[in-house]
Amino acid sequence: MSERPTHAALIQFPVVDDQLIVGGMTVAQIATQVGRTPFYAYDREAMSRRLRELREALPDGISIHYAIKANPMPAVVDHMAGLVDGLDVASLGELRIALDSGTPAAEISFAGPGKGELELQGAVAAGITLNLESPGELERALRIGEVLGIAPRVAVRVNPDFELKSSGMKMGGGPKPFGIDAEAVPTVLERIRNSGAHFRGLHIFSGSQNLRPDSLIEAQDATFELAYRLADAAPTALEMLNIGGGFGIPYFPGEQRLDLGPVSANLEERLAECRDRLGDTEVVIELGRYLVAEAGIYVCQVVDKKTSRGVTYLVTNGGLHHHLAASGNFGQIIRKNYPVVTARRVHAGPRELVSVVGPLCTPLDILADKMELGAAEVGDLVVVMQSGAYGYTASPHLFLGHPAPLQVLV
Image (cartoon, rainbow, N blue to C red; front, top):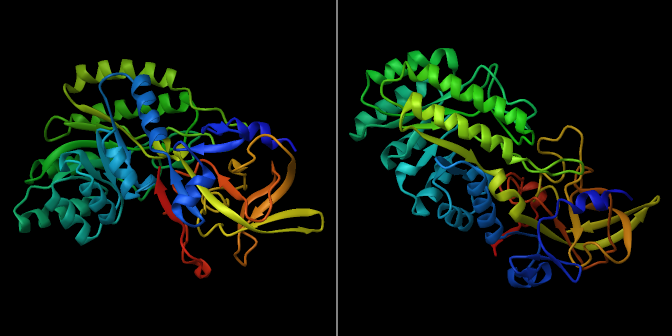
């Protein structure tokens, strides 16, 4: 019965009369507005507040890009586009959403290994920046540029010879499908020099979901040093240096919120040094999860309540097919509970130890395993917090043929 206080610290939304408030409404009011459960709800003011706080924390001169793979709902992207300095996409579908947001092509970049012919054609035609993942991708982009009569705008994504320590996902260091190995980059830069491409700069992304300032500082220091070395081989001055992101958010009891103070202080020094060594290069931080994860909730409804050999189960109409990450099947090695609450009984009133499960015929369909929640009955709403990133689109909606969840921006 010890998880409630520690999980409570992770709840970022107001609680009024013991009911969770998102976008100025109770979850029950949102459910009435949406029309059915399950659904995801994203709080636009929470996203705006995160951007304001981030800009206040970071030194002047840092550009912030939103990696829309974290949450590509068009309404969310439209909202974020008005807050950030650029968008980063990872597919042709995301590119269309980014362009529909009204973001200028010059402020959109495209990363990801294995870009297909249609994706490269769309990117070159739109005039966005291609973050090149291989020498072969460069050649394909050049050929497409010749056919279209357009000089491709390219940056080189570098697979660095270091990694972001203690990160949830390591995107650099060692052999990786992402980017071009640092030692091979000078050859690619020479090829760009002798082509008709418009060289924009470097993209160095070493890891994600990190809560340790010392790890981020170490990786950012190494990133700038690598960029300085590679800039000597660049065909032109770097217009842009994308140093990646990696800023994490707390999901589980015991995790400490990222302290941006030391990171910002170090970036202040690095930016001054960067201006001396690279001139007017735009320094970009690319963030997804950090900007939107805590602004979103997933809501499902209790359809049955049962006890099996001493364990009480809340059986809901939601589950892993809607929220794979919360089920523990998206990146977790040892399953941990996301913050989960009963929408109308967040902190007070009777409590009970329950497991929240979905309707799927698999033992993996667990949203909360033996958590203390406010007592719930059939018809009550259960809320999974920290659901604004990698929730809806990272889940297998077609599994077992249940309806997909809805999404709403409030």
